Image (tube, rainbow, N blue to C red):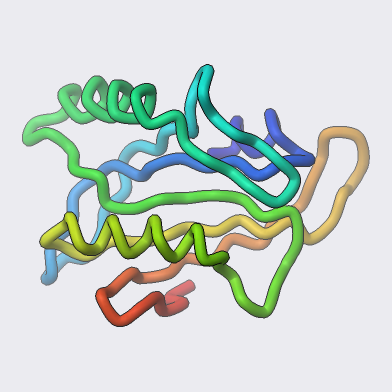
Length: 139
């Protein structure tokens, strides 16, 4: 995630989180992807995944582990802090994730708080539990 944050300091970026999750132990994140290679959208206030790439990289990373990893969440970056942390598009991704996963999921949000100089940004990281009722800040 740090590499991706550095690569896209002025635009939004993100990816998927892979690991293990169950109701008793919660979410364990072991891998994080970037958002794509060719068909990814990085704009100042918008981000969209390259779906074929993300599916491919998730399969490769997942199969490196026994048992294979599951998608346990998403992560992305905003270029500022907002009282409302997620856009309608973000909430739609959260809803799709929760509907398709029988276990707990999370969303990790990096909000840019300051620019410390050339290629050095500061971020506030927030972690949200995703449920069918919405999201809850657990950071």
